[in-house]
Amino acid sequence: MKKNFTVKTVVVFLLFLSIATAQQLPENPMAGRVVFEKQGCISCHSVYGSGGTTGPDFGKKIFSGDDFYLLSKMWNHSSKMFLVMAQTGTKRPSFTGQDVKELSDFLYFVRFLGQPGNISTGRHLFSTKGCARCHSVGRAVPGKVALDSMKIYVSPIHLAEVMWNHSTLMHERGIRKGIRLPSFSDNEFADLTAYIRGASSLKTEDKIYSYPGSPVRGEQLFKSKGCYYCHVEKPIGPTLDRMKADQSVTEIAGAMWNHSGKMASTMKKMGLKYPSFTGDEMADVISYLYFKNLPRAEGSAESGARLFKEKGCENCHVAGNKVDAPTIDKFAHFRNEDEFLAALWNHAPKMEEVLLAHGKKLPELMPNDVKSLYLFIDAKTKEGK
Image (cartoon, helix red, strand yellow):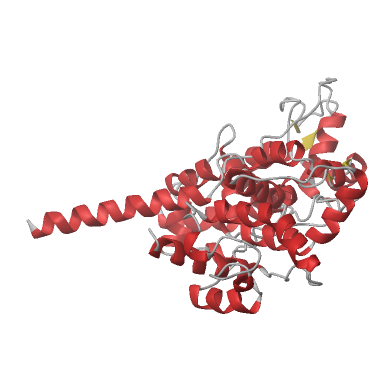
Protein backbone atom coordinates (compact mmCIF):
# COMPACT_ATOMS: atom_id res chain seq x y z
CA MET A 1 0.00 0.00 0.00
CA LYS A 2 2.82 2.33 0.96
CA LYS A 3 4.70 1.46 -2.26
CA ASN A 4 1.66 2.25 -4.44
CA PHE A 5 1.21 5.57 -2.69
CA THR A 6 4.86 6.45 -3.28
CA VAL A 7 4.70 5.59 -6.97
CA LYS A 8 1.45 7.52 -7.39
CA THR A 9 2.94 10.52 -5.61
CA VAL A 10 6.00 10.49 -7.88
CA VAL A 11 3.84 10.24 -11.00
CA VAL A 12 1.65 13.15 -9.88
CA PHE A 13 4.73 15.19 -9.00
CA LEU A 14 6.33 14.54 -12.41
CA LEU A 15 3.05 15.44 -14.12
CA PHE A 16 2.96 18.68 -12.14
CA LEU A 17 6.52 19.49 -13.20
CA SER A 18 5.61 18.81 -16.83
CA ILE A 19 2.60 21.12 -16.65
CA ALA A 20 4.59 23.83 -14.85
CA THR A 21 7.31 23.69 -17.52
CA ALA A 22 4.75 23.85 -20.33
CA GLN A 23 3.18 26.91 -18.75
CA GLN A 24 6.53 28.72 -18.85
CA LEU A 25 6.90 28.04 -22.57
CA PRO A 26 4.70 29.91 -25.06
CA GLU A 27 2.50 27.94 -27.43
CA ASN A 28 2.72 30.76 -29.98
CA PRO A 29 5.48 33.35 -29.37
CA MET A 30 4.02 35.55 -32.11
CA ALA A 31 0.77 36.15 -30.17
CA GLY A 32 2.36 39.19 -28.53
CA ARG A 33 2.51 40.92 -31.91
CA VAL A 34 -1.23 41.57 -31.53
CA VAL A 35 -0.64 43.17 -28.10
CA PHE A 36 2.25 45.19 -29.56
CA GLU A 37 -0.05 46.68 -32.18
CA LYS A 38 -3.33 46.84 -30.24
CA GLN A 39 -1.79 48.63 -27.25
CA GLY A 40 -0.11 51.19 -29.50
CA CYS A 41 3.52 50.15 -28.89
CA ILE A 42 3.98 50.09 -32.67
CA SER A 43 3.21 53.83 -32.80
CA CYS A 44 6.59 54.58 -31.23
CA HIS A 45 8.53 51.35 -31.70
CA SER A 46 9.27 49.24 -34.76
CA VAL A 47 10.44 45.71 -35.49
CA TYR A 48 13.06 45.59 -38.24
CA GLY A 49 11.85 48.95 -39.55
CA SER A 50 8.13 48.24 -39.42
CA GLY A 51 6.49 50.73 -37.05
CA GLY A 52 7.21 54.06 -35.37
CA THR A 53 10.58 55.75 -35.01
CA THR A 54 10.21 57.62 -31.71
CA GLY A 55 11.45 54.69 -29.64
CA PRO A 56 14.07 52.02 -30.37
CA ASP A 57 13.62 49.39 -33.09
CA PHE A 58 13.39 46.00 -31.35
CA GLY A 59 14.98 44.38 -34.39
CA LYS A 60 18.15 46.37 -33.67
CA LYS A 61 18.02 46.96 -29.92
CA ILE A 62 17.51 43.39 -28.79
CA PHE A 63 15.37 42.65 -25.74
CA SER A 64 16.52 39.62 -23.78
CA GLY A 65 14.89 38.46 -20.58
CA ASP A 66 11.69 37.31 -18.94
CA ASP A 67 8.59 39.25 -17.90
CA PHE A 68 10.41 40.88 -14.96
CA TYR A 69 13.08 42.19 -17.33
CA LEU A 70 10.40 43.71 -19.55
CA LEU A 71 8.58 45.41 -16.68
CA SER A 72 11.89 46.76 -15.34
CA LYS A 73 12.77 48.35 -18.69
CA MET A 74 9.30 49.80 -19.17
CA TRP A 75 9.12 51.06 -15.59
CA ASN A 76 12.50 52.79 -15.68
CA HIS A 77 11.58 54.51 -18.96
CA SER A 78 7.95 55.19 -18.06
CA SER A 79 8.44 58.86 -17.15
CA LYS A 80 9.93 59.60 -20.56
CA MET A 81 7.34 57.40 -22.28
CA PHE A 82 4.42 59.12 -20.53
CA LEU A 83 5.81 62.55 -21.43
CA VAL A 84 6.10 61.61 -25.13
CA MET A 85 2.59 60.12 -25.05
CA ALA A 86 1.20 63.33 -23.54
CA GLN A 87 2.93 65.44 -26.19
CA THR A 88 1.71 63.26 -29.06
CA GLY A 89 -1.75 62.61 -27.69
CA THR A 90 -1.05 58.87 -27.52
CA LYS A 91 -3.15 56.81 -25.13
CA ARG A 92 -1.21 55.14 -22.35
CA PRO A 93 -1.38 51.35 -22.64
CA SER A 94 -3.10 49.35 -19.93
CA PHE A 95 -2.21 45.68 -19.72
CA THR A 96 -3.70 42.43 -18.46
CA GLY A 97 -1.48 39.70 -17.09
CA GLN A 98 -1.80 37.78 -20.35
CA ASP A 99 -0.80 40.90 -22.28
CA VAL A 100 2.42 41.17 -20.29
CA LYS A 101 3.27 37.51 -20.84
CA GLU A 102 2.56 37.56 -24.57
CA LEU A 103 4.34 40.88 -25.13
CA SER A 104 7.42 39.70 -23.24
CA ASP A 105 7.56 36.44 -25.22
CA PHE A 106 7.15 38.28 -28.53
CA LEU A 107 9.83 40.89 -27.88
CA TYR A 108 12.27 38.18 -26.77
CA PHE A 109 11.34 36.20 -29.89
CA VAL A 110 12.19 39.05 -32.28
CA ARG A 111 15.87 38.12 -32.30
CA PHE A 112 14.97 34.52 -33.10
CA LEU A 113 13.19 35.61 -36.29
CA GLY A 114 16.44 37.05 -37.61
CA GLN A 115 17.26 39.18 -40.62
CA PRO A 116 16.14 38.38 -44.21
CA GLY A 117 18.75 36.62 -46.35
CA ASN A 118 20.91 38.39 -48.92
CA ILE A 119 20.89 36.87 -52.43
CA SER A 120 24.36 38.13 -53.40
CA THR A 121 25.91 36.83 -50.20
CA GLY A 122 24.08 33.52 -50.72
CA ARG A 123 25.46 33.19 -54.27
CA HIS A 124 28.97 33.68 -52.91
CA LEU A 125 28.38 31.14 -50.14
CA PHE A 126 26.99 28.58 -52.60
CA SER A 127 30.35 28.67 -54.33
CA THR A 128 32.79 29.14 -51.46
CA LYS A 129 31.08 26.65 -49.14
CA GLY A 130 31.44 23.98 -51.81
CA CYS A 131 27.69 23.49 -52.39
CA ALA A 132 28.24 23.86 -56.16
CA ARG A 133 30.49 20.80 -56.22
CA CYS A 134 27.49 18.52 -55.66
CA HIS A 135 24.44 20.68 -56.38
CA SER A 136 23.02 22.90 -59.09
CA VAL A 137 20.29 25.52 -59.01
CA GLY A 138 18.63 27.39 -61.87
CA ARG A 139 19.63 24.85 -64.53
CA ALA A 140 20.25 21.11 -64.59
CA VAL A 141 23.89 19.98 -64.51
CA PRO A 142 24.71 16.29 -65.22
CA GLY A 143 26.00 14.47 -62.16
CA LYS A 144 24.75 17.11 -59.72
CA VAL A 145 21.67 17.13 -57.50
CA ALA A 146 19.36 19.96 -58.56
CA LEU A 147 17.89 22.04 -55.75
CA ASP A 148 15.14 23.54 -57.94
CA SER A 149 12.82 20.71 -56.92
CA MET A 150 12.81 22.03 -53.37
CA LYS A 151 9.60 23.86 -52.54
CA ILE A 152 9.67 27.42 -53.82
CA TYR A 153 8.38 28.42 -50.38
CA VAL A 154 11.64 27.19 -48.91
CA SER A 155 12.64 28.98 -45.71
CA PRO A 156 15.99 28.83 -43.87
CA ILE A 157 14.50 26.39 -41.37
CA HIS A 158 13.18 24.17 -44.16
CA LEU A 159 16.63 24.12 -45.78
CA ALA A 160 18.17 23.25 -42.41
CA GLU A 161 15.65 20.42 -41.94
CA VAL A 162 16.34 18.93 -45.39
CA MET A 163 20.10 19.11 -44.83
CA TRP A 164 19.77 17.61 -41.36
CA ASN A 165 17.73 14.66 -42.60
CA HIS A 166 20.31 13.99 -45.32
CA SER A 167 23.35 14.78 -43.19
CA THR A 168 24.38 11.15 -42.64
CA LEU A 169 24.37 10.46 -46.38
CA MET A 170 26.05 13.79 -47.15
CA HIS A 171 28.83 13.16 -44.64
CA GLU A 172 29.43 9.64 -45.99
CA ARG A 173 29.63 10.90 -49.58
CA GLY A 174 31.86 13.74 -48.49
CA ILE A 175 34.31 11.30 -46.91
CA ARG A 176 34.33 9.09 -50.04
CA LYS A 177 34.97 12.07 -52.32
CA GLY A 178 37.44 13.71 -49.96
CA ILE A 179 35.14 16.70 -49.52
CA ARG A 180 34.89 18.42 -46.19
CA LEU A 181 31.31 19.53 -45.63
CA PRO A 182 30.85 23.23 -44.81
CA SER A 183 29.98 24.76 -41.48
CA PHE A 184 27.65 27.74 -41.07
CA SER A 185 27.40 30.75 -38.77
CA ASP A 186 25.57 34.05 -38.35
CA ASN A 187 22.91 34.61 -41.05
CA GLU A 188 24.46 32.30 -43.64
CA PHE A 189 21.56 29.83 -43.76
CA ALA A 190 19.18 32.69 -44.57
CA ASP A 191 21.55 34.05 -47.23
CA LEU A 192 21.93 30.63 -48.84
CA THR A 193 18.16 30.13 -48.83
CA ALA A 194 17.56 33.53 -50.42
CA TYR A 195 19.95 32.64 -53.25
CA ILE A 196 18.43 29.20 -53.90
CA ARG A 197 14.95 30.67 -53.96
CA GLY A 198 16.02 33.54 -56.23
CA ALA A 199 18.02 31.39 -58.65
CA SER A 200 15.50 28.55 -58.82
CA SER A 201 13.85 27.83 -62.15
CA LEU A 202 10.54 27.63 -60.25
CA LYS A 203 9.24 31.16 -59.86
CA THR A 204 6.42 32.68 -57.85
CA GLU A 205 5.22 36.15 -56.97
CA ASP A 206 3.95 34.99 -53.58
CA LYS A 207 5.64 36.22 -50.43
CA ILE A 208 7.71 33.77 -48.45
CA TYR A 209 6.76 33.18 -44.82
CA SER A 210 8.51 31.03 -42.26
CA TYR A 211 6.72 29.12 -39.53
CA PRO A 212 8.07 30.47 -36.21
CA GLY A 213 7.73 27.23 -34.26
CA SER A 214 5.99 26.25 -31.03
CA PRO A 215 8.28 25.93 -27.96
CA VAL A 216 5.65 23.76 -26.22
CA ARG A 217 5.57 21.21 -29.05
CA GLY A 218 9.33 21.59 -29.41
CA GLU A 219 9.85 20.38 -25.84
CA GLN A 220 7.74 17.30 -26.55
CA LEU A 221 9.71 16.56 -29.74
CA PHE A 222 13.02 17.13 -27.95
CA LYS A 223 12.11 14.21 -25.71
CA SER A 224 10.40 11.93 -28.26
CA LYS A 225 13.21 12.32 -30.83
CA GLY A 226 15.81 11.19 -28.29
CA CYS A 227 17.55 14.57 -27.91
CA TYR A 228 16.74 14.55 -24.20
CA TYR A 229 18.64 11.28 -23.72
CA CYS A 230 21.95 12.68 -25.00
CA HIS A 231 21.67 16.28 -23.85
CA VAL A 232 19.98 15.92 -20.47
CA GLU A 233 19.63 12.37 -19.18
CA LYS A 234 23.23 11.16 -19.67
CA PRO A 235 24.43 13.69 -20.95
CA ILE A 236 26.57 12.60 -23.89
CA GLY A 237 26.39 15.84 -25.84
CA PRO A 238 26.46 19.44 -24.59
CA THR A 239 23.95 20.13 -21.82
CA LEU A 240 21.18 22.63 -22.50
CA ASP A 241 22.71 25.25 -20.22
CA ARG A 242 25.89 25.13 -22.31
CA MET A 243 24.09 25.61 -25.62
CA LYS A 244 24.26 29.14 -27.01
CA ALA A 245 20.62 29.23 -28.03
CA ASP A 246 19.78 32.94 -27.62
CA GLN A 247 20.43 33.53 -31.32
CA SER A 248 18.42 33.75 -34.51
CA VAL A 249 16.81 30.64 -35.94
CA THR A 250 19.39 30.56 -38.74
CA GLU A 251 22.28 30.74 -36.26
CA ILE A 252 20.83 27.91 -34.17
CA ALA A 253 20.11 25.86 -37.31
CA GLY A 254 23.70 26.40 -38.42
CA ALA A 255 25.03 25.26 -35.05
CA MET A 256 22.86 22.11 -35.25
CA TRP A 257 24.15 21.35 -38.75
CA ASN A 258 27.77 21.87 -37.66
CA HIS A 259 27.10 19.36 -34.88
CA SER A 260 25.40 16.77 -37.12
CA GLY A 261 28.50 14.91 -38.35
CA LYS A 262 29.93 14.21 -34.91
CA MET A 263 26.48 13.46 -33.58
CA ALA A 264 25.71 10.93 -36.34
CA SER A 265 29.05 9.17 -35.79
CA THR A 266 28.54 8.95 -32.02
CA MET A 267 24.97 7.66 -32.35
CA LYS A 268 26.04 5.02 -34.87
CA LYS A 269 28.67 3.71 -32.45
CA MET A 270 26.08 3.59 -29.66
CA GLY A 271 23.48 1.87 -31.84
CA LEU A 272 21.06 4.80 -31.52
CA LYS A 273 18.73 5.95 -34.30
CA TYR A 274 19.61 9.30 -35.84
CA PRO A 275 16.60 11.65 -35.48
CA SER A 276 14.86 13.04 -38.55
CA PHE A 277 12.29 15.81 -38.80
CA THR A 278 9.21 16.38 -40.92
CA GLY A 279 6.94 19.35 -41.54
CA ASP A 280 7.54 22.04 -38.94
CA GLU A 281 9.19 19.81 -36.34
CA MET A 282 12.67 21.33 -36.57
CA ALA A 283 11.22 24.83 -36.17
CA ASP A 284 9.42 23.63 -33.03
CA VAL A 285 12.58 22.11 -31.54
CA ILE A 286 14.73 25.15 -32.31
CA SER A 287 12.15 27.54 -30.82
CA TYR A 288 12.13 25.36 -27.69
CA LEU A 289 15.92 25.54 -27.40
CA TYR A 290 15.71 29.30 -27.83
CA PHE A 291 13.25 29.75 -24.96
CA LYS A 292 14.86 27.13 -22.73
CA ASN A 293 17.74 29.41 -21.78
CA LEU A 294 15.66 32.57 -21.48
CA PRO A 295 17.40 34.87 -18.94
CA ARG A 296 15.23 34.89 -15.83
CA ALA A 297 15.21 37.32 -12.93
CA GLU A 298 16.02 36.06 -9.45
CA GLY A 299 14.77 37.33 -6.14
CA SER A 300 13.49 36.54 -2.66
CA ALA A 301 10.68 37.65 -0.38
CA GLU A 302 13.30 38.79 2.15
CA SER A 303 14.87 41.13 -0.41
CA GLY A 304 11.39 42.27 -1.37
CA ALA A 305 10.61 43.29 2.21
CA ARG A 306 13.76 45.40 2.29
CA LEU A 307 13.06 46.95 -1.12
CA PHE A 308 9.46 47.74 -0.09
CA LYS A 309 10.97 50.14 2.42
CA GLU A 310 14.00 51.36 0.45
CA LYS A 311 12.02 52.13 -2.72
CA GLY A 312 9.44 54.08 -0.75
CA CYS A 313 6.50 51.70 -1.31
CA GLU A 314 5.66 51.72 2.40
CA ASN A 315 5.22 55.50 2.34
CA CYS A 316 1.91 54.99 0.55
CA HIS A 317 0.94 51.37 1.15
CA VAL A 318 0.94 50.98 4.94
CA ALA A 319 -1.71 51.96 7.47
CA GLY A 320 -1.97 55.69 8.15
CA ASN A 321 -0.73 56.84 4.73
CA LYS A 322 -1.78 60.34 3.66
CA VAL A 323 -2.59 59.61 0.01
CA ASP A 324 -5.51 57.25 0.56
CA ALA A 325 -3.65 54.41 -1.16
CA PRO A 326 -4.57 50.75 -0.51
CA THR A 327 -2.46 49.17 2.22
CA ILE A 328 -0.51 46.00 1.54
CA ASP A 329 -2.72 43.98 3.86
CA LYS A 330 -5.70 44.94 1.65
CA PHE A 331 -4.09 43.98 -1.67
CA ALA A 332 -6.00 41.35 -3.62
CA HIS A 333 -4.00 38.18 -4.17
CA PHE A 334 -2.49 37.94 -7.66
CA ARG A 335 -3.02 34.63 -9.44
CA ASN A 336 0.41 34.79 -11.06
CA GLU A 337 3.41 37.03 -11.58
CA ASP A 338 2.06 38.54 -14.80
CA GLU A 339 -1.08 39.82 -13.08
CA PHE A 340 1.17 41.53 -10.54
CA LEU A 341 3.35 43.04 -13.30
CA ALA A 342 0.29 44.31 -15.17
CA ALA A 343 -1.12 45.88 -11.99
CA LEU A 344 2.26 47.50 -11.22
CA TRP A 345 2.49 48.99 -14.72
CA ASN A 346 -1.12 50.19 -14.74
CA HIS A 347 -0.46 51.82 -11.35
CA ALA A 348 2.61 53.74 -12.61
CA PRO A 349 0.82 56.90 -13.92
CA LYS A 350 -1.04 57.46 -10.64
CA MET A 351 2.06 56.73 -8.60
CA GLU A 352 4.15 59.14 -10.67
CA GLU A 353 1.51 61.85 -10.25
CA VAL A 354 1.58 61.51 -6.45
CA LEU A 355 5.39 61.46 -6.32
CA LEU A 356 5.77 64.51 -8.58
CA ALA A 357 3.41 66.43 -6.31
CA HIS A 358 5.91 65.78 -3.51
CA GLY A 359 8.97 66.59 -5.63
CA LYS A 360 9.98 62.98 -6.09
CA LYS A 361 10.20 60.58 -9.04
CA LEU A 362 9.50 56.92 -9.64
CA PRO A 363 12.10 54.66 -8.03
CA GLU A 364 14.32 52.71 -10.40
CA LEU A 365 13.65 48.98 -10.39
CA MET A 366 16.00 46.31 -11.71
CA PRO A 367 14.62 42.91 -12.83
CA ASN A 368 15.64 41.20 -9.58
CA ASP A 369 14.03 44.04 -7.60
CA VAL A 370 10.72 43.51 -9.38
CA LYS A 371 10.91 39.74 -8.80
CA SER A 372 11.68 40.24 -5.10
CA LEU A 373 8.85 42.73 -4.63
CA TYR A 374 6.47 40.28 -6.28
CA LEU A 375 7.57 37.43 -3.99
CA PHE A 376 7.21 39.63 -0.91
CA ILE A 377 3.78 41.00 -1.85
CA ASP A 378 2.64 37.56 -2.99
CA ALA A 379 3.55 36.12 0.41
CA LYS A 380 1.82 38.97 2.21
CA THR A 381 -1.41 38.64 0.22
CA LYS A 382 -1.44 34.90 0.84
CA GLU A 383 -1.25 35.58 4.59
CA GLY A 384 -4.38 37.71 4.34
CA LYS A 385 -6.46 35.04 2.62
